[in-house]
Length: 132
Image 1 (cartoon, rainbow, N blue to C red):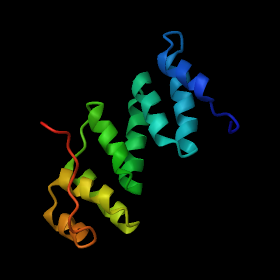
Image 2 (image 1 turned 30 degrees about the vertical axis):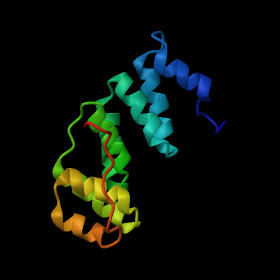
Image 3 (image 1 turned 180 degrees about the horizontal axis):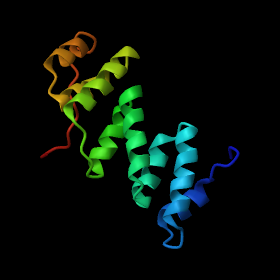
C-alpha cells in the first residue's frame, strides 16, 4: 500500500459505511487525486458531496484528455459542456488515444474533430448495447 493511501478494505469502508464522515471521504479522495487515482477520488468526492473535488476531477479530465472521467461525471448526473468534451478530445488526440478522442468529439458533435480521428481509425464506431 502506498503511504497514506487506503487499501481495498478501507476503500470499501469509505464507500459503503454510513459511519464515515464526509470530511474523511473528501480528505482521502484528495490524497487519491494527488496520487493519480482520479476515478477512485471521483467516487469518494461524489459520495461526500464535495463539489470542489468533483470540479477538480472535471478540470483534470479536460486538461489530460481523460474522457472516461467525463463519462463518469455524466453518469453521475453532472453536466459536461460541448467545449469541455472538445478540449478533452483535443488532449486525447495529442497523445494518440484515438478511441477516447472519438468518444469526446462525438459527445461534442464536433465534425472537424471526428474527421481528424477517422483519418487514424477509419472504421471505428462507438459501441452501444443492443436495443439502446
